[in-house]
Length: 309
Length: 309
Image (cartoon, rainbow over all chains, first blue to last red; front, side, top):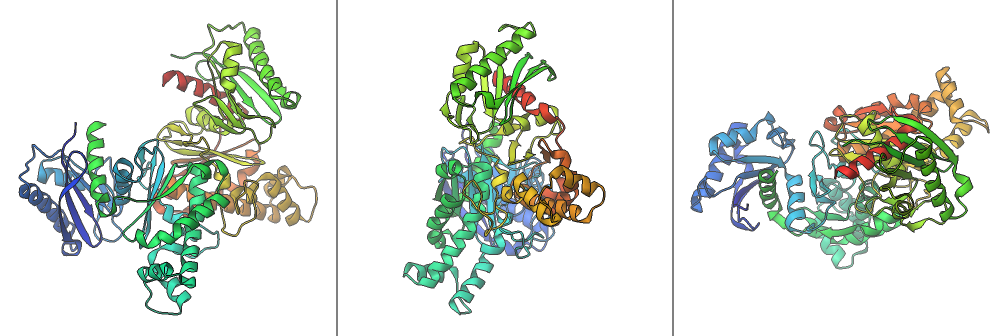
């Protein structure tokens, strides 16, 4: 059975809400600044309940014609328990039974999961990963997020922490990473590191990735070299994924993925050159296709999957 | 329904056959040298049919009281199609429909898969991975084999090539590997490389891994350093697996896994130090428990799974 849902995407900057049509189109949207509610977790929970209720009211909906609420959050989430383990960028959230708390307030089914996992679910169901049983979906940004669909299912891992491509080590003697590890992919291609590297390569202090993209598009040799180097690091990490998991697709997205168009060819070259021929020969590298709606749509897919299982 | 099966483990040296009791015990064994039959693929196929028939006859069994035949082979196998893609160490095998050919000869259900995948299946069902939904099973030897159980299922990958931990790169500028890649784990801890390294470290020309094990057991500092270095390389590759897949167990086996007892502590230390805390905190490192029977028992599990699905 198909039904409308409310999908919520809690980001560090904004909380985005969408009313999703049974067929998977976002038919209404609202957004509030996250910062206003981060002083205490009860504030954020109350804001979520209020905004969800307001969206339903504004669209003439009640509990009888909404199938459920799905929420993506940036952190370690236990989907099965509806529990927020922790949110690295929003203090005070540790082992909070968010799904149960909201279920009580809204008297609707509520499901929660990690935001990148929901993006992968959305791309698999509606986007660049349609009809693909096995894929990895990346979001490139400040961090390098990723999630896995294996055998047509979101692969969460027994502790819900699976999919951390950003923390696959590229070198045994690599730079220290925030995660405690060394040489993680994120220490090479996380946004802050890329901006610092861009400044060094260009001999400037104010480079942005948008500017590096524009310079590369105009044929600037240093900017092209910058993106080639970035693509090589990403490709090298993906060699591990391709040899280990043999996925059919690598989906590359994230808020700034347009800036990354110069890395696609390099990533392809690295896989062809360095990964094993069977899995390298079958993996496709594609851009994410759902843009900013992916988190909301993934929340919708999660609610439907939960009803079906 | 439970039934007896014939499990066959085709190795580079020997073909081992076992009659497996419905409950998963090997109750009769035979073995023939692989080399006698490698001149042409029809010879090997005929030998397999003959040996399987002989084992049934010797144990007073016929087609009515054997549920099927399972065969593990060292190479790329398409389980669903019953097809041998290729066997790197036995020439002349490329796209051979082995299951169908043997089914015709034996008039019994025949299933085939990669040998390391069957070892993982056996350890998961009967051995060190019992009651574990998500694990990686390694076989350390000339090559570094591995296979994945994810969500209580053998994860083969869409092209049947999943699980190649041996070809996870440890360093971007690493040594060239036989697979065409660079810096693969196998180039650091494959047996040939380990023996060469042992000779260098000991200033000798005839070291064996057994000798390095004995020296380490006797407290030899160089031998202990050798195993520590080996464990660090393996641990660093496993950081990628732990962060990417969040498995509950890492099972380490292989014909010579006894020699590796000195690496277990180092692997643990590396994961605790370098992997993310959530997945590192829950993963157990254990030794494989089924020894030489693992391949035959895994073939038995495969036949049962095929009947149940």
